[in-house]
Image (cartoon, rainbow, N blue to C red; front, side, top):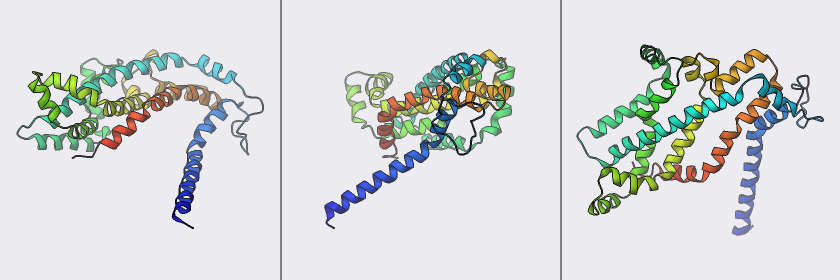
Length: 278
C-alpha cells in the first residue's frame, strides 16, 4: 500500500469512527424527541419504538397548556441578558487590567483570584443567602444577576490569555494618536476580542439556562420561576408523564442549539487562540 492510499484509508476510518461516535452521543437527543411523540403507555415499551406509528404532536400543546413554559422561558431570557452583559463588561475590564497594566502585586492578586475558583459553591451558599436576605433581595432576580457584574475568575483568565496574544504595539499606536486607556480598549481591542467574548456569552447563557440551584434558593413566586425550576415543578406535579416532559424539553432545548450553531465558528477560533501565551 502506497503512502497516498494509506492516508486515504486512515482518513476514511477516522470519519467512520467519528460518525459512529456522533450517533452514540445523539442517542439521548433522539430518545427525547421520540418519547415526546409517544403516548404514556408506549413511553418505556420494550423493545423501544424509535419512530412512533401514530406520532402524538398534541403532546406539545398539552405540555405547554399544563405549565406556563412561555413565562419560564421569558424569565430565563431576561436573567440571561443581564448576566451576559455583566460578565462581558466586568471580565473584559478586569482582564484588561491584568494583561496591560504593570503594578506591584499584580501576579499575586491574579493567583488569589484564580484560587477562588477552588472554593466549592456549597461553602458560600449560606453566607450569600443571609447577605441577600439582609438586603431584601429574596424572591427577586438581583441575587442571580448582580454577582455577574463582579467578574468571574474563569472568564477573566480566558480573556486575559487572549489579550496576551494581542501585540501591545496596537496600544502604543493608539496612544500616539491620542487615545486614552478606555478608548484603546473600546475601539482597538474589543473588536479583536470577539471570539473570546463569544465564548463568555455562550458559556454564560448555558449556565443561566441550566441553573437550577440559584433560582430554587432565591425565588419563591411561581410566576418568577426559570425554565429549570419550571421543568422540575412540572415533573413533580404531573408525575411520570415522561412524554409530556420530553415534549416540553424538546422545545426548551432549541435556544441552546441555535446559539451554539451560530456561535460555533467564533468559539472554535477563540478557544484555539487562548492559552498560546501565558
